[in-house]
Length: 411
Image: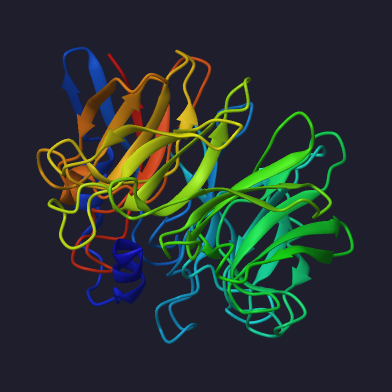
């Protein structure tokens, strides 16, 4: 959370460097021991956007889609720009599909979620602020950039959530979309909601957090084959360090499966993934070993059984990574992810971890022109290549650059 708060406070301060430098960086490739890391696109912090803090979506043709938090039209949102929706094709050409105004269409500043498709190929995403009440929006856009539509504007509390930040989950059986808001709800500690009519934009709050059962959700939700939703709240619970919860997809049976204690089992849990047996896997951005990454610890990777039994799979100490982002299942059956800090250069890592807890630091980001401090987790294509977003590059947004999109092929 501290890391993410610091990112939100960063301000645009310097113009873009020469296009010649950008061309050099775009062709940068690093190879070591048969693994390959390459920069696919470097944001200029101008009309293309800046700070691609959300993750990526990849379509069947290999095009990558995402959201930037800032830039676009630099005359909007206090001259920072309100961000963009973009498409990067397989040739490395970026197209801006929508430029946010910060008004009724929203402002993604503080949005960490990815775009998701519906059955027709339209893309859905969230903006954490803006909209009619300035509490955030859910939007839909075609992959061509046509038909941008705000399908839901979050009203003021206590009638709804406030501040959607993370990726929506779409139930493939019903088409309903579920999400979380960082604030709002009946007691202002956040909410879990369902978008009941995606075409018309009506939502229903399934659960309002009350602190004792969790507060300030830090990720999206996952669903099992029985229709139960799983997720986390970054704070609250019995120790104030966050919870993992379970509930039905109609909002009944809310249960706290695990209360985090900050040490040794972590603080500020994020998004979770499930295995076929119903075990829950995730990471915490803080907590764990409080002797490292002062003052809260570098975070952990955990497993929680369907009955709520927790196993700490890995505790971060900084040298091999710190502040993990969300996990994904790799084609090899292992969990893969990124850390926003730590590693050899203290610029973050790409890692994999087995379900039994064998951890491998696979790649250490170098920072600046080579990219570092990954904003989100990974996605993988059918050939085994991974894709993600990082900071660095041209200093048109902050000292560490406006951000990049990378491709990584493991050994």
